[in-house]
Structures are given as structure tokens and as C-alpha cells.
Length: 246
Image 1 (cartoon, rainbow, N blue to C red):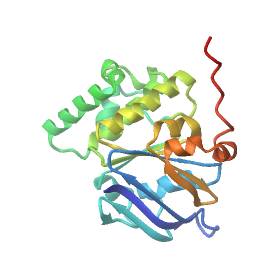
Image 2 (image 1 turned 90 degrees about the horizontal axis):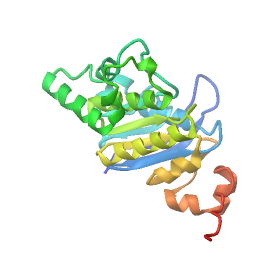
Image 3 (image 1 turned 60 degrees about the vertical axis):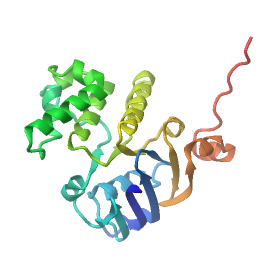
Image 4 (image 1 turned 90 degrees about the vertical axis):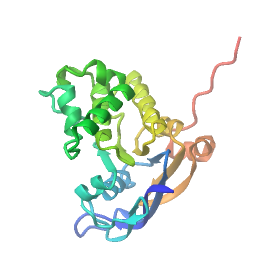
């Protein structure tokens, strides 16, 4: 069963031509699905439609088997769809604890909220270690983990990630992708948009290449990585060959 599915979606902004032109994707439970493609392909627009920030002109948005086409962000969140925005969205003058607990503002049961807080601290150790620190004192990669933890406070079915590695150094980027896998392994499906296409596909179970608002090709991520033509067109060329063993 898919946690979220977009079916034949057309979407755009104002009176301009549609950005998405018959786009479809399904995110199975317990999986990471990544969307890659050139700038302007429509990747971020997919997340806006999936999160309820942008209503589609046509097509369907289905969450957990229910048609929620046109539902706003509050209803989508209540249905189990959480969005982690591009860039950093922590409140720098608040503690890590305060930032994370904001994600559970709709959870009224204190016992359940405490249970969720313990879960995210265990899942993301740096969050627990820096629980009482001001979020603004954390590194960019650590702040992104706080955002991940905050998104999981409502126990979502699927988390939408928009360019989580943006602005991070290679070491922090590797850590962030490791945390994406941890989220998946803990039971949360992930729909990931990422400019670092090769690294995203190395992390994902399924991949979807967008071009001009349509699906160019999709399939198991490892198969897309192994396609030399796809690598030349969309993944920044062929991966560097390892030096021979000596």
C-alpha cells in the first residue's frame, strides 16, 4: 500500500503554463522515493502539491487510500503528511527541546508527546545530546536533524524532504542521508527531492526522474544509478572509477 500517491497531476502557479503535466508517483510504506531532475523540472512543486500548499489543477492526491485532493496543509498534516522545508527552519533563539516539541503542538496527550520526544531523541542522538542547547548554536547538519525530529513528533505516515543537503558540507551531507535511512527503517516513508541526484539515489529504494513536469523514467534506484545514459543526462556524468587494488 502507498502512503501517498499523486495521480496524473497537473499543477502550476497563477495563469502561467502548468509546471506539472500529468505527473504521477507513489510512495510505498517503508520506503524512500527520491525525485531527481534538472532545475525547473517541477520537483519542489510536487512537494507543494503533496503537502497541500498548492492545489492541483487536475489529478488526485491520495493519502492512505483516501482522496485528499485539494485539502490544505492542516488536513494533510492531520492525515499523516509532514513537510521539512528547504534550507533551515529552526527557531535559533529557542532550545532544541522547544523546537522539537513545537512539532507536536497538535498532540494533546502529554504521555504520548513525551513518548514521541523520547523516540526522536533515540532516533537522532545529536538531538538528545543537545536537547537544552539553543538551536542557533548547532551546525547546519545538526539543525537539519532537529527539523527531522520535529517533523516526526506527529507520527507521520510520510515525510516530504525538500533539498535536505542544501548548504551542507560533504560530511554533514553524508550524516543527513544516513538519518533519512534511519527514518525509513523506523517506519516512516520518505519522499525526497534532492539536487545531489547520485547521492539521493544511493540512499533511496525507488527513483523518479522528472523532466518538464513529467516522469522521464522511474524504477528501483540502483537500476537508475547503473544506467550510463541516465547518468550522463541527469546525474552529473559517470561515477568516478575506483583505483585498482594494489
